[in-house]
Amino acid sequence: MSIEKFNVKEFFVYVLKACIIYGIISIGFSFIGTFLEGAESQDSPLENSGFNFEHLSSHVLWGVIVGFASVSLRYLMLAGVFPIIMDFDHLVGFVEIDAIARMTHSIPFAIIAPFLMMGILGKKDYMLGIISFALVFSHMSLDIFYGTGDFPIFAPFSSEIFYFYGYDWIGFQIIAIISVVIIVLYTRKIQNRKKSDIRNSRS
Ligand SMILES: [Zn+2]
Image (cartoon, rainbow, N blue to C red; front, side, top):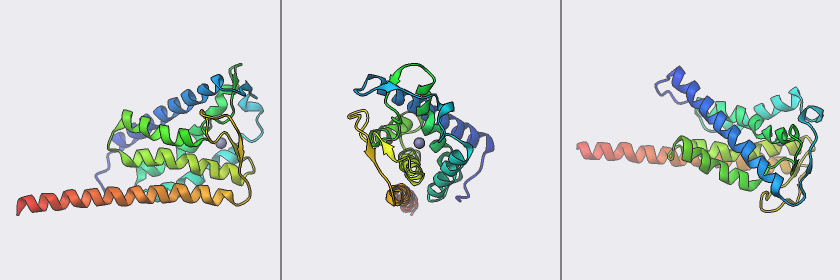
């Protein structure tokens, strides 16, 4: 964990803001499914048997594994919460409109969410961006592990469902971890360059 000055209030305000915005983006994105071909009535999330405590806590654990790669407490925290927020796409089941199920379980969501998150919370917050991206893959990894790997992977551009199974979950979790590691190394490089620039300007 990085030993930067730790401000508890700032920490929780940041985490809360990030979670609320990720939630709004997830729900907003899910409702796009209403307008897509193949939209159909959805089960209420409460009747959905896959929606239970064990499933949710496994999502948290799976996300936290990815979060550790960020070597930062705030992103570790987000990595634990984002996978649960992603399943807000089940909320379309509460309103009686036709929709495409599991809209957030898609690559376009994984790409769009980081840009929106960074646009709203901080353009240079690369770690926030990559956590928003990686956790989609980590979430899908666990769903595949549980045998529910049927995703509209190109939604909203296509509502076709793709099926992932067997050991596919490994690939998804590896994508998540590696993408976080790449950004950690990149941000370290930027910081080191800044430090050496400061040193050079002093000498
Ligand atoms: Zn899910």
